[in-house]
Image 1 (cartoon, chains in turn cyan, green, brown, orange):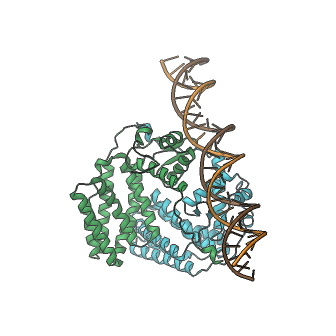
Image 2 (cartoon, each protein chain N blue to C red; image 1 turned 45 degrees about the vertical axis):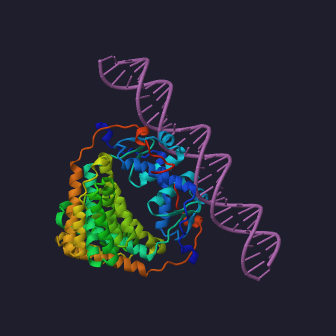
Image 3 (cartoon, chains in turn orange, green, blue, cyan; image 1 turned 60 degrees about the horizontal axis):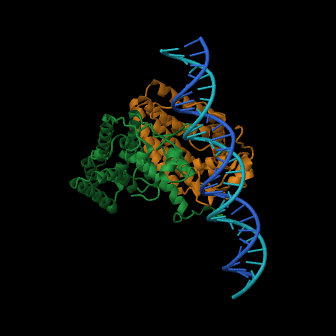
Length: 245
Length: 245
DNA sequence: TGGTAGAATAATGTGCACATTCTGATTTTA
DNA sequence: TAAAATCAGAATGTGCACATTATTCTACCA
């Protein structure tokens, strides 16, 4: 009976599984880089040709991306890059607000020394990125900040959930604004939030987080994506399933 | 350009798609009925035989169930009914607490006449189920209550997310306790919460929801599943992919 | 000339057969 | 006797070919 309950240990990815993930990652990367505009149809044969893998592989990756909300599938019609409405983006940020204000409040109540250290380290990393004007890195760090807060709660489910919400909320932004615009998400806000948490000021931390998220959604709502159709071959230029940069 | 953005209308499910969903539902129903114990391996050929569909259909349904967290897949080994740890259940309820306390607080601030009506209707439905001792119905209503609260917020993303959390939190319970035990989730709590919301008492509503969820997780933690292995043929007795009861 | 019907083309969906990997039992060996 | 190795059976994974469905282009007619 007991051995029924035991968890199966994760084994070192054998080739095939790794390739599946590579295809999945390649498509996701193209989206994050803003190379695939909303409404674009992802044709399986074309993707298979471009990524140099079998169509079944592409198929599986697309299914997974659909399940995770990155893409939308219409039976017998194809798979498409979703066109998120401003309204949907607002909704996602609304849910994030609910979760993340709760998160910072909890952290105020129960954070320990290691958590404090990681928070400080993250803030200083962001400051470093600002100084060197490394926008790509700053964009990454900005997202990771929110993930970090979730992880510090020590709740695996929470982390996973928030990770999903984050990808969905950045997607609309990534789809419309290419890399060069990734310098918005004020690291100032992050630093202030951390300061409030370290001071164990729950009300202030929650308020700052609320304002921070409201600011982000406002900023995104103002943005209008440029209408530039693009060919799949161009979108995946430099992106391969075999080896990732 | 504009037609790139338009949403594709959902069409009336053509046969094949409906069959996919039927297989998916059949497996899910077997789980909800507690016929599949944690750790059970779901063999594709056996399922295909029992449900009288092709193996590919079973395959797709299993993949979907894995993506949604109902099942766990191990490459080259098979898909299994997950054995949720008490700890994981606690984590899920923790996330639910974050979301649902925020939900009731928001409802207190902005509910209207239709929302109030639906809440009252639901409570009276639960009372009815208690009077007639209809445990199956009461179990269903208990879950729907939480969904209802989310839906009244008018946030589609929120509803979807909470739906997922609910299925995952009831799963452990459904897997271990068969139908006869489905009379626990105090409808009293629900009635009190509704009363607090209608009184627009945000603090009290949040507190009641917190206690309610804490009570549920405590109740579940105390439960020890009975060790009864079961054959797939038995588990799916009376459950068909062709027609659902 | 504009619009519709129809055919050609291309993409998605599905079942099948085969390759690979795992499981369990039997045999071999220390 | 116990542990390791081997081998048969079964289950999962994958590519291919074909069926079905959508899309586009063309020709025809009002």
